[in-house]
Length: 83
Image 1 (tube, rainbow, N blue to C red):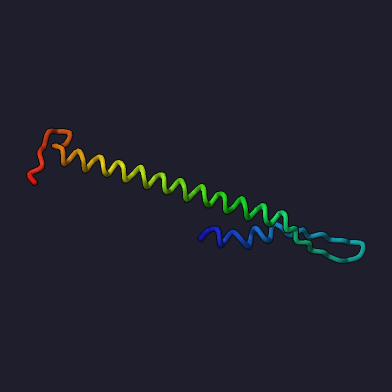
Image 2 (image 1 turned 180 degrees about the vertical axis):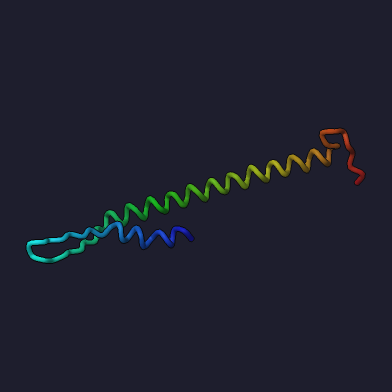
């Protein structure tokens, strides 16, 4: 979602504005290479964030699984499961 918000800003960053006071004119150029590089960097960062989230979820699931195993095996204080 945040990436969608950032895309117009990346496009705007690719614009180069030049003001010519002698001719009283302003020119705007769009640099496609800058826009493509910015978009590539944003998508790479989004991929890295997604991977970090997936790793955190996996680690949390492993911790929950370990706790469940401890409880079923009698727990750290020697309790037993009556099931």
